[in-house]
Length: 347
Ligand code: KG4
Ligand code: ZN
Image (cartoon, rainbow, N blue to C red; front, side, top):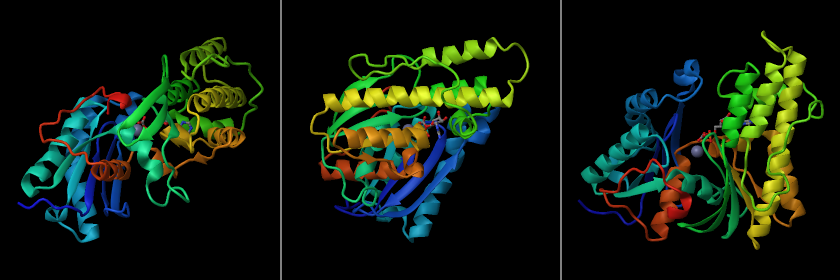
C-alpha cells in the first residue's frame, strides 16, 4: 500500500446527535457532504439518549461516506487521509466514527487523523470561502453550542488557550431548558428565538449572571432558574402565549447582554485578535449574531460567523481540521484512543 502525499480527505462526525461525512479536496474545496440529524430519534426523550445515538450512527455512517465518494466519483483507495472526531463527545458515537475511519486507513494506507471536535469548530473560519480572507492567528473563538460555552484564543493549529468557559450550563442547554419550561419542543433554541419575535425583551427583568465581573467565564443556570420560578408562579396549565413570548424575548436579551459583556472581556484578554469567530448552534441566533458583530466592530476587530450549517455539527469542519493538521505535520497512530473528555488546550 502506498501512502499518498496529497489527495482528498474524508471527514466523519459522530460525537453527538448528527451523523455526518464530508469529502474535501486538499485545498479545502468541498467535493461532497452529508449531515443526518437524529433530532427525531431523541425528541420524545427531550434530549440525546447516548445508546440510541450510537446505534443510529452505526446504521447511517457507512451509507453517508459512500454517498460522498459516489457523488465525487471517487473510491476509498483515492483517499489521502481519513479523519474522525475522537472527542469530546459520547463514547458510543466516537467509537463508531473512529473505528470506521481506522478501518479505511488500515485497508487503504490513508493517513488517519483523530480530530478534536472543538478544534474543528475553531478552525472552520479558515475554510476557504468562509471569510473574504482566512483569519490569521491569533483570533478569538466564541463557541456556543448545546454542550459547550467557551472563549478560546486560537493561536495556531494545535495551539489553543482557554480564556473562559461556563461554570454551570452551556448556553444552548440554557436555551433548551428554558424553552422546555415555556412548553416549546426540543431542541428549544430555534423555537425560543421564533417565539421571542412576538415578545417584548424589556417586559420581564431577568438576572444577567457574571455581568461586569472580571474574566470571561459564563453562567446560565441562575437565568434558567429565574424563568422556572416565574413559570411556577403562574400555577398549573399552559402559559398564555403573550406571556411566554415576553419571557422568551427577555431571556434572549439577557443571554445576549451576558455574551456581549463576556466577549468584551475576552477580546481584552486576547490583544491583537485578528477576528472574533463564533461557532456552535447558538451562533445561528440572529440577535446574538447582531450584538456580537457590534461588539467586535466597537473593539476594532470583525466578526466571522460561518453559515449556519457550518456553525452546527458537520463533517466539513472535521475534514478541514484534518487538512490544517496535515499541513502542520500532524497525523495520528491507528492506536489513538477516543477521548470523551478532551479539553481544547490539550489538543
Ligand atoms: O452546535 P450544536 O448544533 O450541537 C452541539 O451542542 O454540539 O448546538 C445545538 C444547540 C442546541 O442547544 C440548540 O437549542 C441551540 O444550539 N440553538 C439555538 C439556535 N439554534 C440552535 N439557540 C438559540 N437560538 C437559535 N437560533
Ligand atoms: Zn459541536
